Amino acid sequence: MCLDDPHHSRRDFLKLASLLTVAGAMPLLSSLKARAASEPDAPVRIGYLPITDATPLLVAHANGLFEAEGIQSERPVLLRSWAQVIEAFISGQVNVIHLLSPMTVWARYGSKVPAKVVAWNHVGGSGLTVAPNITEVKQLGGQNVAIPFWYSIHNVVLQRILREAGLTPVSKGNGPVAANEVNLIVLPPSDMPPALASRRIAGYIVAEPFNALAENLKVGRIQRFTGDVWRNHACCVVFMHEHDLNNRPEWSQKVVNAIVKAQLWTREHRAEAARLLSKEGANRYTPHAPEVLGRVLAPAADERQGYIASGAIRHAGWEDKRIDFQPYPFPSYTEELVRQLKQTLIEGNNGFLAELDPAATARDLVDDRFVRNSLAAVGGLEAFGFPAAFERGEEIAV
Image 1 (cartoon, rainbow, N blue to C red):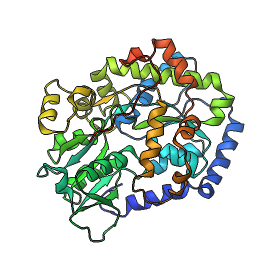
Image 2: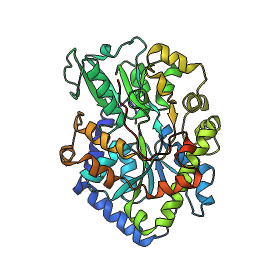
Image 3: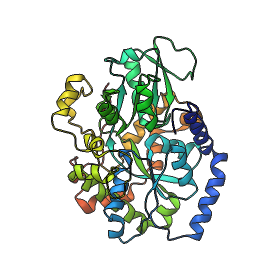
Image 4: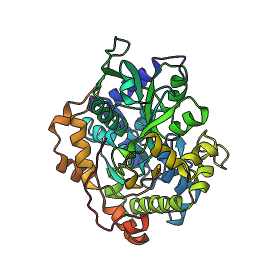
């Protein structure tokens, strides 16, 4: 997608909105059922976007961790939009994806996609980037700010930040925007830095490495890291088909084992992971330079102090990393996510949210059987630097 066609992202959103309805998903689900019947022993087929959210899936493939578990995997499929990811997944072309955590809520309850969250892919890993001349959130009033999708943690966190600054999030397209309003528009991540550089938007909130890219290009500065607003929040999660979880439990367990081991490896080999994912890596998984990815995965020690001084990090005591990896899907997060979505401006089909009970959704949306086993095999949550308990309280502080 490119900025030469400003309606492209809008069409992509409308396509995704049509896919994630009961009627729109039905033909794709028929294809999924046919594929499952014809290929009961399908290998791991990963679908991903070229963002750091995909790191564990790509590391697992690159390091042969699926094969080490005794299952086959094909080369991951690079997709260019969330609509492509969803379409490939629902139709069965791919069977393991990373997906924005709020989007899994929409998929399961808005269009009845028979799939579940089996693990988290990463925590943090996103930021609000603004034009260099903007130093305070309130300066975004009367301007456009881009989000990657309505059902995203980015949209949820951004709206919390805006309201704290006395601003009202709106969706007005090309309509007039009042001084106390911020117009939200959906853009693909790759379009965001050039849109900021051309002043088409005043800022964007998105996954890495597009915040780091704006820094390297000197077209933007980070106003706030999302993990400094919602501590250790999930961004993308691992989404798998229920028919695999129920009919191929051993295979599913091995998939999750590989992903958990990939997360551990990444935590211990951050600089190596940056190069592996980059355009200079053997598999060229992403189009990003290793120095851009390195700024996210293995930042220089002195950068953190700069972010504390600028206010991009306000909760220094949280000691969160720019991106980190921890696979357990805490129920408290899913419960709070549902509550936050109910209070968030979301364009399109959102009526189903009113009917969702947070606790019931957390129990139904997430299948943590496999990740619990995987964690036990590698030393538990302590191996990731977290307390052993499978419970936590959510900390949100703008």
